[in-house]
Image (cartoon, rainbow, N blue to C red; front, side, top):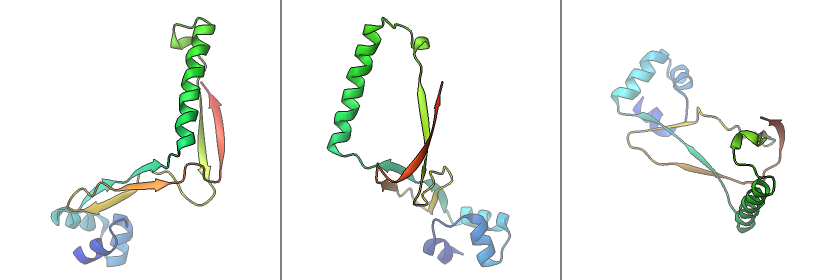
Length: 123
């Protein structure tokens, strides 16, 4: 099993159990006994120089907006958000894990402006 974990450190415990013909609980327990722990992969977006300027421009605009309309409480501000769905198959998942005996501090970089569609909502 140790060899299988080293060859496929990102494979889920369930898939590994099926591959090895073991129970899921046995696979999980054995991985823990071998000191293989799940570590989360940190996804970061590639930032280009124009992106920093856009952020700074927005902050300056927002500050002047608050001053112009004399808004002192954040309760008086409408905030919006959006969720993006990539068309290239990437899914932003909290379940992306890497199994290792030590924390590898993995960072996965993705292109910031990938093809996707968004869902927008306001609070």
